[in-house]
Length: 240
Image (cartoon, rainbow, N blue to C red; front, side):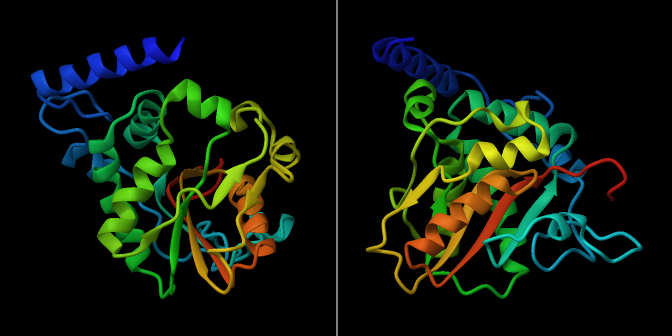
């Protein structure tokens, strides 16, 4: 689809948003972009969790993800499990720019963030590759990060981190392939990062490969510390 056609399509979607009442991205009911019922059904990630990657811990009290990987970020947290209505709403936001949904989800990011004692200087959304950004016309991580940073009173630095090359969609890959796919895929501008504590924001954390690769680039560029915050976390069979 050409740029002009994408602009027409986006303009038509915006016009419809003004004409029609909002519809919940989770259940489809009219009245709100993200209804209270769907928010209440989300499986919150609370209680005992890994201090590094935020994965809920079972009776064994040992984190399988951190046993397999040495993450480059200090700590990561997610608001809820990537399931049900939340999963449906996140997928819808990947395919259609919905700033109002980003604002609604940013409130949940604030809930997860306020439970931490992190001292943050900059908020950086995980960037898309240039081609995918052109095709989509927006970055869903920035739709989350921008209203979150505003609500938290933090500086958004959207252009500091770039994706060097296009990568295969992570959902198509196995766990090991995800890590290979993201290796060396980010580059960060050292100028605004030196000595700064950075918070990466993304929609979903699965294995943590994307956040890890981005954190590695930020650390290399001189960031003092890197933390990560996502709306959802993919939990695997057998996990809470």
